[in-house]
Image (cartoon, rainbow, N blue to C red):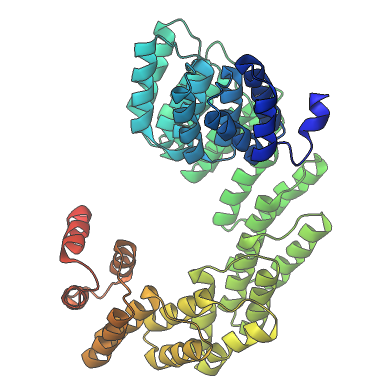
Length: 492
């Protein structure tokens, strides 16, 4: 019966839960029923409902069952809602719930997802004080976190601790350690770890990780040898394995060999995925063979795969390189129509292409084309276009776009103002730059640390022009000198 009523939309509402709690004056009954609801909603991934029930338990001072807390925490961490997970943990402790290994594993998993090694150390100390012993899941999560952060000493220390406590490493443990070395190109250590595997059997992930590592360190022969060893163990390569080798072949310009490998995949009934197709499309675009690239895109659609942002970007870049700007622009609109957002790079390729053809009118009419096609014309479009025009010193065109933007009722942000001001400053037009900064101050816009870093990283003038510009910005009160000095000290 509870299973049926739990699916009613109104059950998790505060008013219904309040009536339910008042109906039964027995705290234990209320705890059991509401805890069951939390578990039920968490299992069904109805996270908001689970949170709502949990919060109501807190309001009525009903202590949830430990299993309900761990189920909710696990659900939140898997969904990536780590901030809420910490709030739930704090509240459950306030309600008198004592953590067990499952709760701590959820919290350590949350730390792993956010890359918070410091918080993990605090949790481990807390576990030790409370006498909660780590299990294989705890150790594997720690190894994975440390390896992803390049903390190999700490990861190997966890391995030593596991062995000293009589806990055998499983293949997940070994795969994380091997992946940590491969990520940094330390293939000798990765292979040493591979040969040291005991009490576990290497799987597809193990071999694919090593093959990918060798491909990234330009050691294709070793990668192919490992593939043979993998097959000799009865493990047929899967799409991820093929993708690693395909990527390397395409990087080396060996398109013919890549196509042979693709045919092998087809013969072995290994279904290509978006990464496979994008790798080939990108390779064809790089050598200017747009006909083959689009042919492959069509094959991709025929196979039931949908183009993703990488597909569109590779084709747009290829079209811009071959000066087919109108086709590139149409594909850009198709990308937006498909629901994808454009990056600064994508706009840059279009802008640079038209500027090389000395066709700035095509850039100026882009916003109107957005509107005529029913696409969203917001500040992001103007921001990226103006940024690029300022970068390549086409200030007059940037200013025209700025005026067009304001005529459409869109107000400039700090990035647009800073781009224009610095472009004028570099061009020796300090009065025009000061006028822009003055307007920025009037609108109470500030230059943040991120904007500062972005402009400093992009500037390659090799002189003190940028430094003088930032001093001028500070004098105008658009950024505090303390902030600027801190950023400079961190960069030293």
